[in-house]
Amino acid sequence: MKYFGNMLTFAAIATGMLAAWYWFKASRVKIDPGWDRNGLVEPGIHSAAQDAWMAALIRATADSARLNKVAAIWTAVAVALNALAGLVWL
Image (cartoon, rainbow, N blue to C red):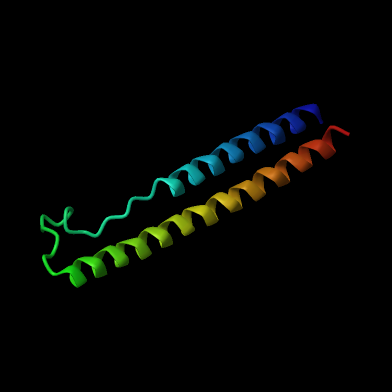
């Protein structure tokens, strides 16, 4: 039983660290309007440039939300594993 409890504890630590990594990645999402990556220059028309920045902001927000969702799921797994390890140690 002690071995199983240790395994659950280490699995909880690993999944918690994985969740932290996903949250770190979610906080580092770049807002990229796309013209640098495609070898283009920023449009001279203000509304076109503004539209590109808004679209990039929406994409970055969606990417960050997806990474946050994955991090929340891994955190739930870590909490469940930690709770199971606590029950095993009783």
